[in-house]
Image (tube, rainbow, N blue to C red; front, top):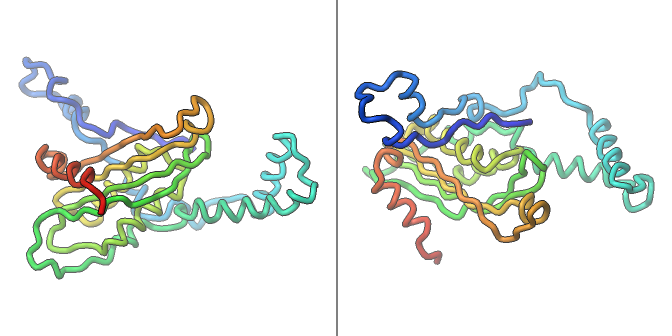
Length: 241
């Protein structure tokens, strides 16, 4: 399934010519951050009425792939492999059946007037690249500036896992996490940074082990205030204890 990924960053001020004192609506649309369809993060990805192959058909597909690579699916060591692979898929892709909105719906109002941002960094995750179905893994750093109410800290980690346990690109994963927090919690701003290593690049193709990919998404006060972006990045890059 190919994801339609729109531009995640607003255009630069230099994109507008000095003579364009009043940019057209089309030009303004180009320089605004792209928005995701709320259906991506307000409900589970799999609808109850969505047609799906049976478990037996899924196991047969694994048998076919074993034969394709030159193996004998009937040899002793592989007899139970189709079942194991399908069970592994149930675990690796359980995010399709989970609802991101439900994770963030319970909030707490005991903030005692707290008005700074909340940061949870170094959230470890593993996801699967939608282009090769190979793992990519790393850490997510998430901050938001609450308005009166806050969400339990573990919920940000759970939200990350829900989106990570689907076929993904790192860019889309970053945007989905930020959009869900922004839409459901309606904070003054959200900042998300993800750093990850992609095995589709480290163990195949160019085979560059250790190469890291960084993506970020800012909304609200983090998008509009470079000083807040810098403070977020400084805290993310600060020494671990």
